[in-house]
Amino acid sequence: MLSYRWSVKATVVVMALLPVLLWGVSQTQITPVEVTSWLPQRDVTQQQYRRFLQRFAVDQSLLISWPGCTIDSPQLGSLARRLREVSRLRPELGIAAVENPVDRLRELEAAFPRASRQAILDRMDGQGVGRDGAVGLVLRISPSATAHRAALLGTVRQSARGVLGEVLAQRLVLAGEPVQANVIDEASRHALESYVVTSALLATAIAYACLRDVAMTAIVLALAGIGQAVGLALTNFWVGSINALLIVVPTLVFMLTLSAGIHLAKYFRDAGGWEQPLAGLGAVASGGWPCLLAALTTMLGFASLAVSRLAPVRHFGVLAAVGLGVSIGILLAVFPAVTGEIGRMRRRLVLRRDRGSESLRRTSSAALPPSGDCAAGPSPQSFYAAYAHLLRRWAWPTVLCGVALGIWGVAGIWRLQSTTSFESMFAADHPTRMDLDWVRTHLGPTKTLEVILEFALPDGEQPDRQWLQRLRTVQTVAAAIGRLPEAETTMSCM
Image 1 (cartoon, rainbow, N blue to C red):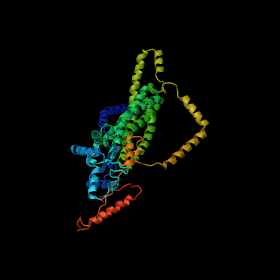
Image 2: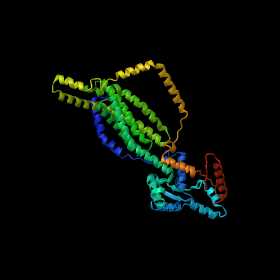
Image 3: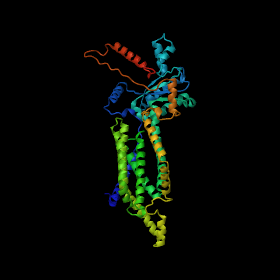
Image 4: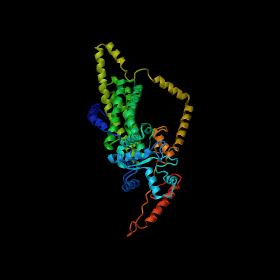
């Protein structure tokens, strides 16, 4: 059973640990989206991906083009040379190769002198060359440059302005995984920097509208803010950084803790309010178990995500469950002492104003929220009575509407689809989505699938024997993949 003395001790401990929480919050960093780290290290797909990187070292591409860019555009070669110079001077950007379709065209023209240019361009379809004559540069990006995506894109745009000019550079089209991941990172950072303040102001307004008491509103907001700091600090201490999914954990903990605090405020009012020295302890005694059990069911729901194989989902579930548990524990432990001390200060202020006069004491007591009523203003009982009367009058229509909405909601479950596509995250008029649509229209698909064929060598056989047969096998597989309806173009060593 929680006593007032233990609540004071818990408050002292929380205040002593507050600098540690604030330090953890200050060290929080937003990390770039890296889908390759989502799966467990022992996963078969993860192992295959690591073997792919060991052999080919590059897994991302950045396509650069602009409206009116053709195979004969002189700016194409100039931009390619400048970007190659950038890759030499700034290796941290991870530019492993700059592929210019003009260079590839010249190689094929030299290898097949009898072939027409159009036939060669048709053969290069999907390799930076579009069917309508549009072309673009392809940058092969090393996976080690994940932390420098923003710098890479900024350098590419700056190089394009130097070659194309300001007017044409404004129409520059960039597409590929580095662009999409950087846009998601920027959106996450913007949400953390902007929406947190907005949500805090909105929560303050809602809390005050429910409580109608400045002191109680400040208490529940402060304790919910500590819960939010717990969520951020746990994320920093355990994961080391915050990403696009974990960014909602602190705000989630804040709102759930605020909801529990508002419930405790109601029990505080029923226990005597500010006039009762131990009203906070009575509120926890009456409402502690309901709040704790409600939080426990929510924590179990979040903790169920711990079985997911995806690391961000697993981290989200564990952090939300632990953060909510710690935050609710702090709320229940600290609430009696905080309300007791603030109530004592309020009563001292009233006694100073009374000056020993019984009439002034009654006047001052009337100025404070009366016992059992923590909220100022008119009683909401009339509203609740009218609401209950309306429900009794329209009971069956209300039930039927509720059942219909429930059936409609259950039917919608079967249409739900899980997706991580970039298009589902941003509106159709977003600049990056518009660039993607332009590339798909003029240059071809932006998503690639690498298929690796491994040939086992019999004992004693030399690696260079039967190589022609293996190349024919690669050609056969590429042709079979190209016939799939989902594949728009294929490219292989053949």
